[in-house]
Length: 361
Figure 1 (cartoon, rainbow, N blue to C red):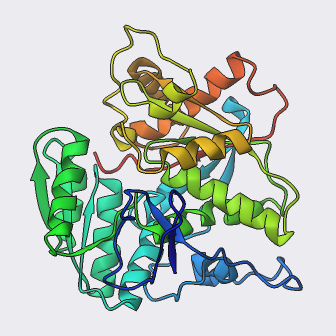
Figure 2 (figure 1 turned 45 degrees about the vertical axis):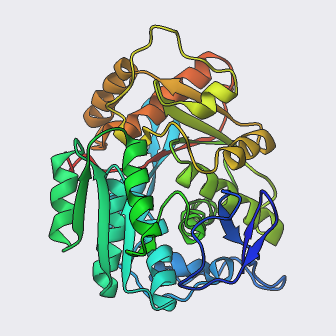
């Protein structure tokens, strides 16, 4: 069963279920699965990848490429730990959501999926669809990075280049969905995607002996990782596997920072748009209200990072051995900002998500 958090309408889950509510709100699963109270957290089969956390997922393991259990490594120069989401099969954390979304599609008998993306989510959906034998059509900005486009095309997916803004790309894809051309496997709208990204938090807690950090910093566009992490940490606390919630701190790009703007963290008026951080160029996230609620509940925050700070941190990460895409660098740039402003104390235990590989340029 699917439900709308805005108006309370419910819909039966199926291939013909709407991709959003009649009121325009995003849909989520009505139930939040949790393990039985007597299920211990210390006997996880890591060979099952994300499905080591099956009691939290309630989705059949229909499509997998062995994703999950990305490393957590010390980063002394940043006085933090990095979770290397860039080492997934397609090079980004989006594989978490794609594995669950395409498993959902396969379970519903879907034979064609549509997605709109600046690159990473499109490649993840196209790759997992190819693994499942499902046709895919990916809508992308005409100016998307060539390396990402070539990778999508090699999966056999149809690539539709759209001139205009990132919002124009979404509009074109939605129009095709509403014409009945395929099932919307959207990383922004599909509830299965967020159930997949919640495994970031489940894994991180397991890797730390069920102790959550004081804070987690992630890039923040549509909020697929940010909100997924919130839901994962919340589920762990509700299951009694952990005792607390980390503060969730987002890194947005100047020129596309609706969460930071809503929190009053305005960038200087003359700050140039941070187009280098293409993975978070989202001006109207589908779940803005949910992201803001997660910020409030965790005493979190969001800031806008400019292109100079992004370029500086991108180079610094590479020199330290972390070959990631520029969007990742907004997270470590934001980390420095949070420390300078006293949002984070010097001795806070912080984990930063490095979300995508630098090999797609």
